[in-house]
Length: 337
Ligand code: UD1
Image (cartoon, rainbow, N blue to C red; front, side, top):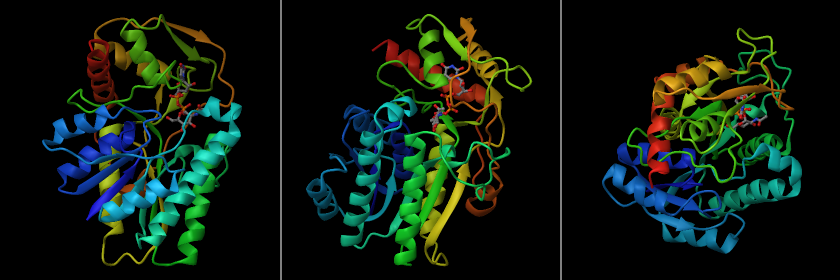
């Protein structure tokens, strides 16, 4: 019996694969390598001490998906695959809706054909409406402000509808806050192609001398130092959350249906705090410059982590300093390749 990881060589998928194999599970990685490299599977193998099967396939290719379910004894799925760049989603909404929604529907159809009904979905804190008070709770109203966010809201709804139609489906929606960091081995991490959109990959490249300075998007927010506050969570903690989610889906007393859980630390850090932590990690000053606010950004976002703690037994353990140290180790390895 194996767990299929769509997007299995991506940032969160690869760390989750390590966690699951180290727990003693079989995994199968599926990826179209649109935003990752086949070499990641080999690196996962080096971390865990054995090769992990990886299949190149696109969720839009129904025949390829069918082959994966026929070739492997798959029992459950963690669905990470999807386009995820907010700005690009505003420019190319149809590409986002087609890829993320059709890909998911194809996946669910293939699962249905093969009687696989356990699914963990890679959702996001972006599904919470912008006017919700912090901390965000799982029962806060949903809504998005860009097509990427809407694909997450819509996929959550598709999964609720499917689980309502067939009560044998058991689905967990994991709503990530801001995943950063990298595996402490330095072998896997985040490596966005082109100019990074997210703060920490950007800071990492500035620290490595690949970009001149960090632009701080707004220092006039109503926050302690004026910069935006987010709930950064180490990707290794996040990966453990997926292991706990799968364990929950397999509990004999769990009867199916859909549950949503926040995966965050419950603590907010400002942009300036992140830059300071990164400076400690890399031992050098990181040049930065305050510029105007980025459209669509909120002042403060952080999770209420209580439900995940109570129901999944999940608690984030790694600190912001550890996140930056691991990110920096990975960035240095990347730069020296
Ligand atoms: C962003 C997405 C969110 C997505 C998440 C994935 C937007 C509006 N939101 O979240 O939908 O799920 O990434 O991780 O894009 N910042 C700077 N300079 C930079 C980059 C960012 O100051 O060069 C600031 C931002 O204003 C924000 C914080 O850093 O306050 C974090 O930004 P980012 O890493 O992009 O994450 P989010 O915007 O929280």
